[in-house]
Length: 111
Length: 117
Image (tube, rainbow over all chains, first blue to last red; front, side, top):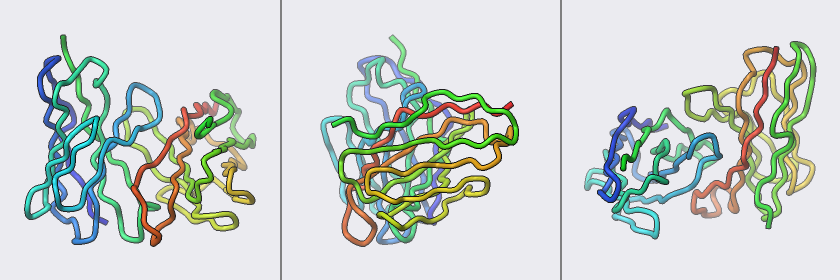
């Protein structure tokens, strides 16, 4: 299964864009990239996912490089409520029953 | 819809005791799973199920049993609790099963915080 590498922590000023990187250099051709976040001690929350093309929804944008070896989650206008741990996940072989969460990136949004 | 409901929210056990963490979902999801999260760590998959009567092991299955007799319920059993099982347990479900197309969106419960003394 492809593994991901994320910085352990990042800071962002409120109102600015938060760009969270993820490296998944061993990703295979049919594997999707998923992003979840976990606010405080709550259950993780789905944000977005993609295969090759860039994706956007009401929460965030996902930019995947052409070689698919890395991606960036963009929160366009970060708020204090976006302070959370963000997980970048590559769906493992056999489907999402092998969805493996790493340590994630702890994003702190400051006033 | 209540979504994914976990009970109890908090539990303290003594070493060697047994207990069952309950998980129920009312979204008619085929796929259900259990994760554990230790302090400062990511989530680790314990067991999962792709439908009633079907279960399989995840990354850290030892010390845990599961069964799936109905689509709605997926209980996690600790037969003989150990201090190493002190953790927060999350149940998650999703609409589709592998091979049938899915969005990958897992819906999580609020967690069950277990302490084993």
